[in-house]
Image (cartoon, rainbow, N blue to C red):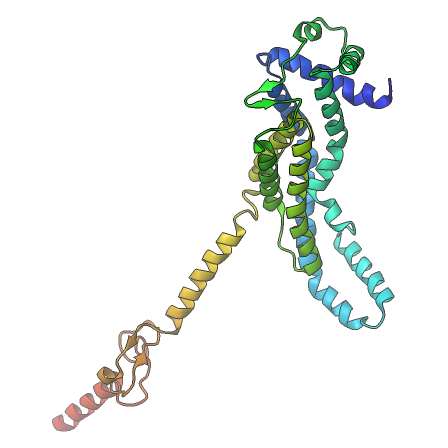
Length: 319
């Protein structure tokens, strides 16, 4: 028995069997429960990663003007530019690893041993070959609750958890949940290369795990979906929806801004003849009722000018 089996495979396999016995003999519910437990244990690390990632993005946007100055200053000395750039990043607390420090990447790296152990645990728990049965007998603990729960059934909803999803529903759910989770934590960057890397990760990661779900037992895909949904919930309670609806909000804000600008420039087009002009004239915005306020100061023969002329003639007659 190697170290991996001792530390990961055997505990996860036996724990899954115990959970199956507790959760109405459902191996699928046992996988979901295991996912929730694992993510709760990792929650403090996940929260710390999310906050660190956001601070790094804000720091990158802060140092952009200084970075542009360095590029101009050391345009002919790439080596010096690299040294000064690294020094600037260090002073601002920016990790040189860039996208590799993304919360999703780090979370996946931490969970890799669990992925491999869960894959082998599913194969052994749902043993169909003599070799799998032999591995199962060597891995289970001598607990009565474990032996009473065997054998376990791989049927869950429409799935056979030992085989890939025949209807491709799980791969779609995996890709969708991972895309939403990654989109929520992605931050707009002023650095084009970093922004391009974020966009690539936003597309490649969900597609890669969707492909993995197509080829591996659907029990592992169920783990991916549950993990993605839990990530969305954790991120929502920390940062809200983040950048998920940023595009729609930006368009709505831009529309309101344009409308305000148009209202500020002027109101509806009014025939100029009514105000003493020959052509159509826009009424400048303001607060007054006549003169400078609503209609501005007419260049020739406007209402304000006519009112003053009438008042002067009346004063002359009184005199």
